[in-house]
Length: 260
Image (cartoon, rainbow, N blue to C red; front, side, top):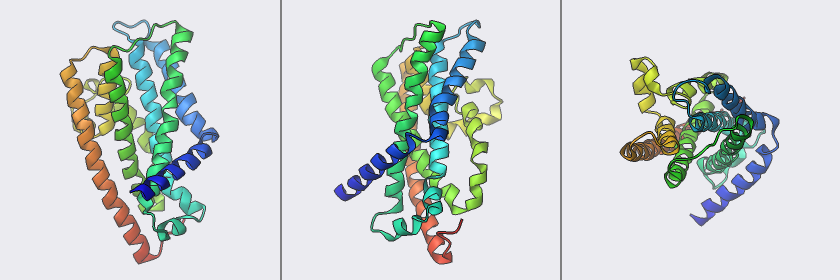
């Protein structure tokens, strides 16, 4: 266990230094969520029942999701493109352990979207942003990180089983903004989309964050959202373990591990 933790920490530290200066990543997790927040506040600020903190939390979630999607989609592919994937798979450390370290680095840098969005909205528009339940909000944020990290571990092998899958990455970014309830309630959507939201842990994480920040939802709903985030995260972790086994088995059988 200690050896695995050392590997996770080493990968986390090195990968965090690498992505922290990447222009695409800076745009994805900092600039894009800021633009979303500013545009949403500008359009909605005069509407009835508008809450700036709801928009700030929602725009930060868009940055977290975009970072999770793009980074984890290329976690394994990046090693393949650099010619390091065969060496990683041939080492005693499991590939999933390496991807876990990279996923933690991805989440860490993505959290900055929330840190930057909060003061920008307060200073530019003069909103007094307050969190209704700070302690519960922190718990919800930790569970959000768990939800996105476990979902990222599912995304990584799926987009690596077939190199052609990587072409679909962009198509999955904005639908999650909608069915995840990041910027508006999913009750505004057609009824048939509701089951899709219910099987996605980011939806329940968004519900918990919005409820604890805005304070408009009974605490019982918050606890239910927490429980479903944990349950779905465990399901995703089990799925990721199976997907990584399938990925490695197919690659060894067909000798296609390093093919682009």
